[in-house]
Image (cartoon, rainbow, N blue to C red; front, side):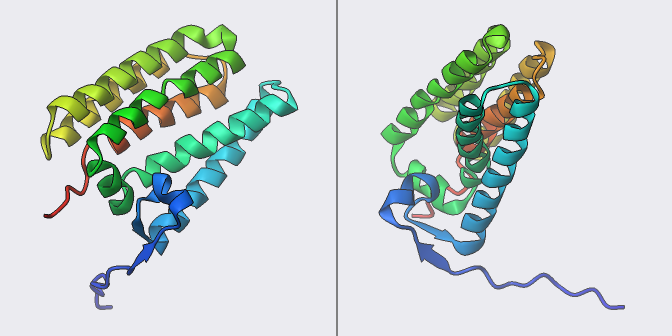
Length: 191
């Protein structure tokens, strides 16, 4: 049976509505948008269920679901051409993006107060690694630095273990979103 070559056709770019440019950039592809949202919703459901199993109340699970969708969707979206180029063309916005990601761990601390050490340590390693990549590494070395930050963040999450599977999974995705998915420039502007 002959092996078929992969299709050489690239998906056509689509314009993204203004309200969603912060997630997908100004242009993206339909497969990128669909996969990003599918992963976001699937992981939100899984982590929400795990949070329910942890004994979180209804409103706490709802908050966890929203955080999970944002973080899981961001892991995928930040590697897409549209999102990467959108933030790549806006260096100041890249720093603001990293800065606002101090909020998510603080919300997690509120939801899982007994796991404050792993949450704060993960936040510190993740934000420091991501900022170092953003400030000091340029392509393609930034990917290597991002991978190193990802490994360090995973070591913190696993090494300081939380009793909550929902929190552990969410922290691992938080590390992936910022250190490996967002901080490196995957598609530097060809201009």
